[in-house]
Length: 363
Image: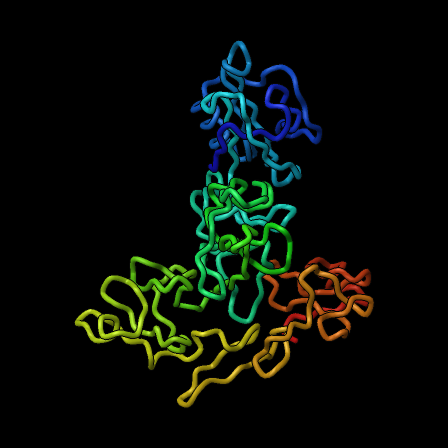
């Protein structure tokens, strides 16, 4: 379970957000169960219909400890997490089970316990599937270097104006200095510092593809996994020639990176590792590479021009970047590949099988 201490969704003394198991309305008032924190957690873990719990200690209640079990999480109920200021951190705890579902912002509950079923290892949101797409708001990876090679500032930086509820981690501390899209700008970015006038500066970042074995921060080797979890390599086509991995895990182009006993030179490796084919599939060939845009929902010599929109609208009334009728992403991570008569992409019968629906899967 993932727990947030000293975090609340409403007035921590009157938890009006709590939805008791089996109820559709939130409640407040009397304590549901008088249990200590660990017992409250165990009760929720053991019950398949419990998805979250709140535990309040004596410091807050002024009496007995209170345990509230719920079959809703804050993601489902549409609440954001506030931060307590005058409550003892040990006296207010909110915990919820995680699976591979998304909340209303498209955020994944990533890589944690899926209730009694145990650990779920789902890398959705860590990288862009080859031939697929990933909305910037869904990215939960750890890239912290901009397209221009600058190191990102932490989101707790004194000049940052973002708030915790704009991030999938729901805390600025957990968001660290990772590239994110807190402002729904259509791409991931981060702050990089201030200029001579004291004005904060920012820059765009890239999201790695799931078949990409090199890292933006130029680390390499087994101790520094790529976004797909495999040991990272160096890019064979790095613009500065940083294609060799040194014995201390850095990509570079000097003798210390390329010619030592434990160095690895990736210069002649797969030419597709630099993501040259956009939304399409890259095929490494003896001389160069080729891009296959079939079924990618994109066009262009490098399959980089998407025919779909990130806001999931589609049809003649909603143009894509070309001004043409927008399609749906045939490789959408949630399967939203069908356009409904109302101009929304989705995966239900109302989107895929009605008389005027359009199914873009395989097209």
